[in-house]
Length: 323
Image (cartoon, rainbow, N blue to C red; front, side):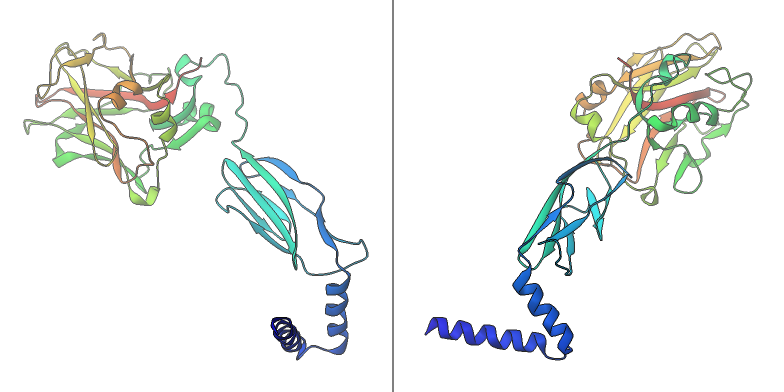
C-alpha cells in the first residue's frame, strides 16, 4: 500500500511539473532526469586573497548532457559565487557547491589577506610596522604605509571628527616641520581659560566598526605611538582610550592628573619626542577590544586647566611593531 501511494504521488508531482511545458521541453526534462549521472567541478580547491576572483566550471556527467546548474556558498561573508565566479570577501574558509538535481560537487575556498609589501628600509622605524590604526598622520607619511593600514581614523569632517569639548582648547600655531621632518601639519591646541580642557578623536556610527580584535587576542608587539613636543616643563597630559564601555586613562608628564600617577614622560626641549604605550598595558587595565568597536572616541586628551598650556601631537596611531 505504501509503495502504491508513493508511486501515485510521484506520478501526480511529475504531471504537475510537466503541465504547461512544450512537448520538446518535456522531452528534455525527462531525458535530463534519465540521463544525468553526476556533476563535476574543474577545481576542488582554490586559494584567493581578499578581493580576488576565480572561475569555476561545472560539467554534467556524462559529457554530452546539458542541464541547469545552481550555485551556493556555505558562507557569503567569506566567499560569494555567481554562476561559477567566486569572489573572496574576507579571510577564512568556505565551500562553494554546484548542484544539478540530486547531484552536487564542491570546491573548498581559502581566503587570505592580501600580501603586504616589505616597507622601505629608509623609512623611520615607526613606519616599518604593520596593522596601523591611524589617528593623526600627514598624508605623505600615510601614503608610505597605506597598504599596511587597517583603519584610517584621521578626522575628515564626514564620519570622523576632532571635537574640542566646550571650547576648552584654542587652535595653536604649528611652527617648523612635523615629526617626520615634513612641511605638513599636525595637531596643535592651546588651553583656554575655563579651568580644564578636553578634545576627542571621534569615529561615528557612519564610519562603521573598528576591528582591533587581533590586538586584544595577542597584544605583544602592539603599541600606541604618539609624537609630542613641548617647552613647558611641568605640563602633563592625560590620554584616554575607549572601547564603548570602558575608558582607560594614561598620564604622560611629570605630575599626576586626576589622581592618576604618570606612566611616562618626554624631554621638554621643543623637539618632537616619541611616546609609546604597550597595548598590553591598556588591555591589562581594562580596555576591551575583544569585539569590534564603533561610535567612540578612539583617543581623547586632557591637558589640564592652566591657560596657555600647549598640546602638540603628531604621528598618533596603534600598530604592530616590526620584529
